[in-house]
Length: 78
Image 1 (cartoon, helix red, strand yellow):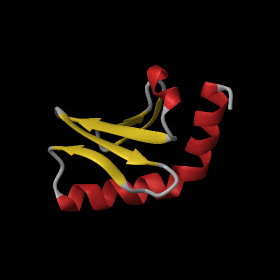
Image 2: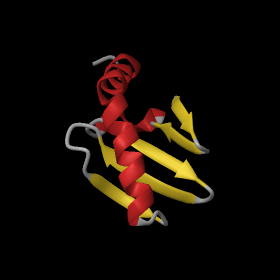
Image 3: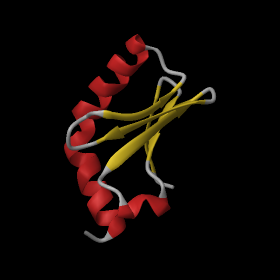
C-alpha cells in the first residue's frame, strides 16, 4: 500500500488490490476515510470527513494529481 503523501496527519495512498478500478486515492486520518477518483476529482466514498476537510483534501489531490496518476500507472504496470 504505497503512501504518496502525509499532510497534516492525512495519509494519501492507494492499495495494491485497487488495480482493477480506475485510478483513485484513499485519504485516511483518525478513523475517517475518503476515496477520490483521480481523473474527475469526484468523491467516491466518504466516511467521517466534513465538507471543509473534503475541500482542503481535494485541493491537495488536485496539486498532485498528475504525479499520482504516474505513480498509479507505474505501480500497476499500466
